[in-house]
Length: 458
Ligand SMILES: [Zn+2]
Image (tube, rainbow, N blue to C red):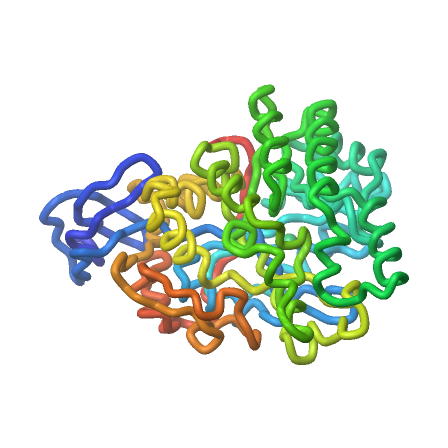
C-alpha cells in the first residue's frame, strides 16, 4: 500500500517512455508498476509524468550594482514550482576577502523558511586571497562543491592568474568550476567606446559584447581547466562558437559541460531594437545573438555537446529598475526573468518541433543538471528511492505566456504572447502537491538546503 499512486501516466525518463503507475511512500518514489494500490490516487491518463525539473542557474534576491534582483526566495521558488521546477541552485556571493563559510551560512539563513522548493548553492570566487582559498575544502564538505567564476564584470572578473589559482584549488578539493566566459578587455573597451560615440541605446549592449568575446573566453577557460585538471561547467553559452569550443574540449576527453538558456534558444538580438527603451527588457549578458546561433544551440543539446538548460533567472522590473539605464545601456541591470516557463518552453519549441525527443527534454531540464551537480539519483529521475518530485505535464494544454499568467515578481516577461502547447498540470515535491494548473497551492517555506557532492554520477 502506498501513500499516493499516480495512475496510468506516460512516464518519461532520460532513457525510456512507458505507461505505468507510480507509487509514492514517505515522500519518495517507491515503485513503478501496474495496478498499484494507495491511500490516495491521481489519474494521470493522457499526461506525461516527468521528474521535477532542476534549474542549475538562478539568481534570487541578489544585489546587482545599485539594485537587487526582484524575486526573493519565496516568490522565485513559488514561480519555479508553478512551472514544474522542484529544485534550483542559486549562488553565494561573498564580498572580496570575506569568509566563504560565513557567507554560505548567511545565504542559507536567508533561504531557510522562505524557499518552497529544495535548493543548492554554488560558491562565487572573486580575486580570492590565499587565506580564503584555503576554505574551499570546507565549503565542499559543507555541500557546495561547485564554484562560480567570472572572466568579465568589473569587480568580479578573474585574470588568468587568479582563474588558474581558483581552478587548482577547486580541483584539489574535488569540486568543479563554473565559468562566465567572455573576454573582459574587449568588452570594457567597447563599453567605453560606444557611449563616447553617442551610441547609448539598449541595442548597443549587444554590440559591446561580440560573439568573439565569448568564443575566445570559452576556449581559454577550457585550456586553463585542462592544465589545472579541473572539471569545468560553462554557464549560459549563447553562440555557435562557444558551443563548438565545449564540444572540442569534450572530444579531447575533458570533463567540460555546457549550459545554454531559453533566451539564447528562442530570442535574437532583434528584440533589442524595440522602439523607445523597450529593448532594455532584453538586456542580459552574454547578450541575445543574431539569428542562427539558436539553431546551433538546439543542435548542441540534441547531439549531447551541450548538457543542460538553465535559466540564469535574474529579474528586474522594467519600471524602476531597467530604467536605471535610460541614459546609457551600460547602466541597465543585466538579466532576464525565466525561472517559471523553462520546462514548458523547451517542450513546445524543443519536443513540439522535433528538435528534441521527450527523453532529451528530460535529460537537459532534469537529469543532467542533477547528475553534474551531485543531486542524482535523489533528484532528476523517476527511479525508486528518488524524492517524489514530479511533474504531471499535459502535452495538449494551450497556454499563452504573459506577466499575468506567470508568478515571477516582475512587470514583464521576455516571452510575452508566446503560444505554448503543453504545460504542467501538477507539480509535486516529496510527494506533496505544490502547484496545480499554474497556481501555487503548497505550504510556505518547506524547501530544504541540499548538500551536494561532485563526481559520483555523470
Ligand atoms: Zn547568472
